[in-house]
Length: 389
Image (cartoon, rainbow, N blue to C red; front, side, top):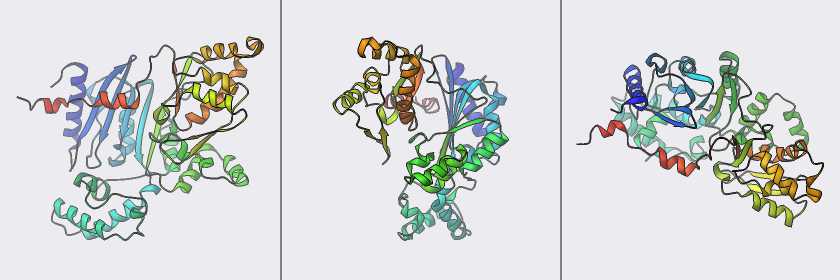
């Protein structure tokens, strides 16, 4: 067993399993790393694992960031589980949470109801799994699960169990999340899918009729997102960030922040966008989100060409503004930071909507790319190390 802080965290894993017990598939995992002085914990569980979250009782201290993916919706009392996580969240810390989305799992819940009937007298798990595989093979193309491209009957047993045979599984709509997270728990929440950002919750991604969109955009944000969820019909999981207080997101108004492309947009170069604008003055840029079918439309502003030229993921806004002025007539005399900021804001907001552009303070080093994170995350389990001779 590892020693020190990492060993404490693996002790927490074992304690969680002992307290909550495991059902069929994989167990929980909790990881720790210290980057730029921050402490992170990641708690995941297969859908076949029921965990009584007891981190608060093990005296591990507080965490700046806690990631809880696919766990709370399998607990008997999700609110209690969330409160346990909050109890070890440092002041100013952030919770990153994923729970199931109700409407996007409609086909799954139809099959769950179906298999409860079919498996009522099944003597054991293997028989229930066999019945489930046979039933999936019989589903007609018209079934919701088939229409949404669900996996076939020959999927791994753990996946089949997770989706169709789990004994404790709940899902949420957008209004139910707001009621739980903001109204009951008094947390500040921002919906943002790990794969698509806030795009799935944005009505203008679906509604092109100007008059209809005007009606929807007049609604409070929570209702706009609820409308988007109902239109999309396929949001099967909700990801969101939650904080104890508001105003914790990095701000464009802090000119020492560094804007950088992220996720599927990492290959985009600001200088290439700038050159495109120079060669095609006044034309909109159409940028396809590499993860979706959505096209982002960037309308160039007065200073966009100069600003994008120096957007490299290393320079702060203040540095970008300084260099951009040098490319303007008379060295940008009379052009203020506020004017440049207002010109850059629509660019940032467009990409940020898809989590394609983020901010970090200039004192913080470059964030690793997703591929680098995935590579560094593949570490041998200390539990498996014990079995080595």
